[in-house]
Image 1 (cartoon, rainbow, N blue to C red):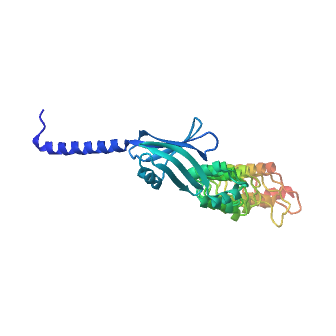
Image 2: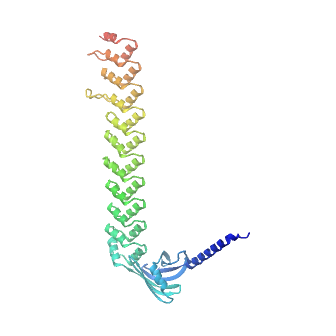
Image 3: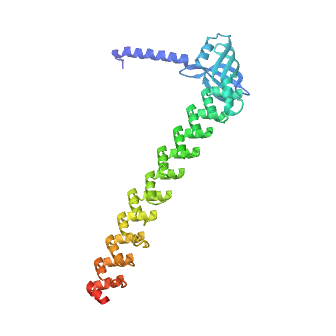
Length: 420
């Protein structure tokens, strides 16, 4: 099918553009690779130059080889590349590539697109002196050469020195490779973490220097792993401080469990204020059973409930704190009276015994048991009937006798006369 006439100019333009692009790519496709060879220290050895590989960027790169083992490859700075490119065939080469840790000196000759010669690394005295403060000895040329090729600045070394780090060259290289920068070194050290391995661990787990410092101020983070555990469980420094502000000091492991169950410090405070000294397990159990802080505060005022399990039972059975308070038998006039058990309280509530009825019956006969009160209530004996048949100076009637005379329809006056 013939190409439409209106498309032919566009096709010619696209073809020319693609041809020019391919020509430019071919011109820059081959990259000049400079190989450094060393049988002992990487700080000195021989170099050779040749073209190899493909790249869309071109440029001069070199690789370091120790014996037959590949080490690394990187670009020469543009100034060194320009100096090399200006040299003519057969010209001697003497190029210095400067780094904070020292200078890489390349000497030799250029032959067309290749060349060869020797290289040496010349350490920077200031850099070497700063590094010595950190590693505790004078660094050798090989170590300084490694620092130059890893791009470790003088500021980085000075930050390690100012933080009083005592580490090996490998530690410093690892710090740099794990993204620990100068401000991170200072921040972690200020928070009490001066071991490079701790810094790397904190950085890898996303623990910021601010979190490390504030957690330490709140009394947590005795080591790096404790901090990362707190951070991994989503615990903020505000959460840590809230427990300290409440006068509570759960351990880091306990805090993690409390946070995982959605507990806040004010929940624990409510229990403490109400007179309960709960363990972490008890707090979690109460929270998981839906016991509210309001229920705890109101219930704590009675002083009759002493365990978290009793509180849980009362709430689950629908017994209100006001009902528990109303049933309390221990009063200023009866300081030795026994408080009702939680199970008795629940039974009274389930059987429809009102608190006022219970209190009135105990006034008439303090020896009535909860079971006696329930039976009297079930038989419809009003509290006024029991009061009316009481005779001062005479022992009160027991529950079964009262039920019997009431069920027989005997009036209070008749019962009193019979008793007299």
